[in-house]
Amino acid sequence: MAVSVSKTRTDSFESSLSLNTVGSTPRLVIAIDFGTFASGYALQWRSDFDNDRLRIHTNTRWNNGGFCTYKTPTALLLRPDGGVEEFGYKAETRYYELEDEGHNPDDWSFFRNFKMVLYRADGNIDSETFVEGAGGKHMKAINVFGKCIEYMKDHAISHLAENGLPYPEMETKWVLTVPAIWADPAKSLMRKAAELAGIRGENLSIALEPECAAIYCSQIPANQLEIEGDGGRLRHVAAPESVVMVIDMGGGTVDITTVRINKDGTMDHVQITGGGPWGGTRVDDKFFTLLRDLIGQKVMEEFCTKHPNDEYDLRMDFEARKREVKYKDDPKGMERFRIRLPNSLKDIWERHEGKKIGEILKGEEFTNRSVRFMSGRLSFDPSIMADFFEDSVTDIVNYIGTTLSDPNVEGLIINAMIVVGGFAMSGYVIKGIRKAFEPRGIPVVRPQATELAVLNGAVLFGQNEDIMTSRIMQHTYGIAFTMEFDETKHMEETMYEESGKKWANNVFRKHVARGQSVKLGEWIIDKEYYPVDDTQTSATVYVYASNQADPIHTTESGCRYIGNFDVDFPLPQPGVKTRRAIKVAMRFGGTELEVKGVNEATGKTYKKKLRLA
Image 1 (cartoon, rainbow, N blue to C red):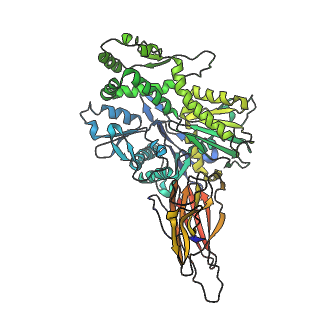
Image 2 (cartoon, rainbow, N blue to C red):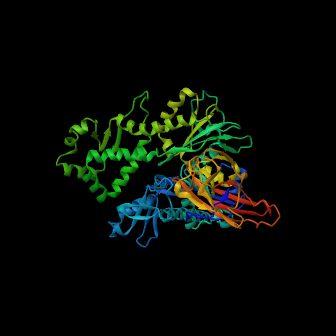
Image 3 (spheres, rainbow, N blue to C red):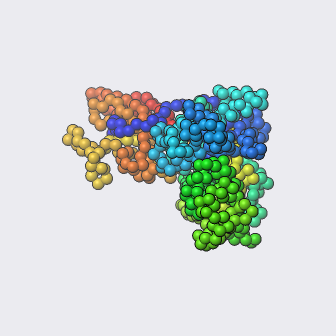
């Protein structure tokens, strides 16, 4: 088999950065949990980790109307010059005050709930990917994410300074969380955004959210867990040799990962990570679509345009109240869902309709839905909210059921399902999952710090990245090469003729298959490559990834160029039989792929580290 020497594609995210140089024991770890709805950061000194690894300092200086919270909305406000004005709660309120202060909001840029663009793009992500903000404004995603990360980075450093603590930049490990189900290009964009924000690449690690949750929950005692369905048997959620399924339910996506806890506390994946767009904002979208249908498009547009502060308060009120929705079979019965109707919205609605709200709600479209108004609040029939939640719960439960039927998992004893994330704080969601899997006898566990499980776990991951010892590959990885043309499987357009033979170019030779378990840090089987003819003295090895299990060509849909490196072939010597071959092997570590080629004739080794994220 011959190594392909024709490059077919480049990628702006190719890099040959070395492994992290901050060391296996950083002096300080700072983790950023970048969420669809809300974000936050936490930090831990190595001395605290050594004495009490759960002594993690979570920032609570996100002020919301006098209340301090662990996270703040993922919202960004940029000045007309492109500089960051505010982030989080303050970005929301400041944006809505611009017009009152004499500014033209059209000159400013405001972004919120934009993280899902990296999921919806289905891997078609690069430095030219854009996100849309308020008023239809567009900006490159890498710049929007970068400015958000920069704000949180500077906030963390300022927090240290205000407490009289140093920021040991060269000895600090930064950890940025991403959904496990994201494609590699999306993870890579987040890395580039963090570097754009001023975080040194060699001090940065990308952590997968459900893995972080598993790490955190493996450290906490049972008395810090809400456990149901175990018959009182479960004493430790992650005892050695146990298998746990982690269900990370955020605002945008739900990530599901199954891991085995080893005797030494390390973890191995037992199944490929999966999930979907079933997070909490899906319920939000359904509710506000209903509200818009009931009240009218023009009324809502005027309300949102003229009273943005009230619109923001309405969304925050819904976010808090949706967590209180009870499951449909609650013995006390589901309560009507009540939400405060801003006076400004009520006035606009009444003016458009030409009558008071009591008369408006006598209309058939409202009586059929049992919509009422009392004491300044709209109330809805419980079945309406149940339907909104049920779609997400059904998708989550169905996916978990499929996961449990997977050959890699079927037959294993799942000791616990760990449910984390902001959406896991919903009573409806947690009860729906518990009820669905009650017949299987699998306890469904929720940590007390549900919202912080990923963030705290990211800190612990930064202290010991070797805790994950194997992963199930989400993609197939291989080398582009040239071989004799086979009309039964090769595409006609890849065929060319040389020296009287037909050859197929850009053939994908698989080294690691999607769904294969790979030990991190270990070299995976060598495969040999040969020159096309006696005159070829060098070649460029091109590395590709595919979301297909058995790709044929590197030019197929779903294939993506990762990087390359050059190798030399020795010239054939007259009368001397020389094995002119290059053995190529791969090994994975964290978010890097290392590739090496060994010249069998000379023993010379060529290596290249390629960033997957």
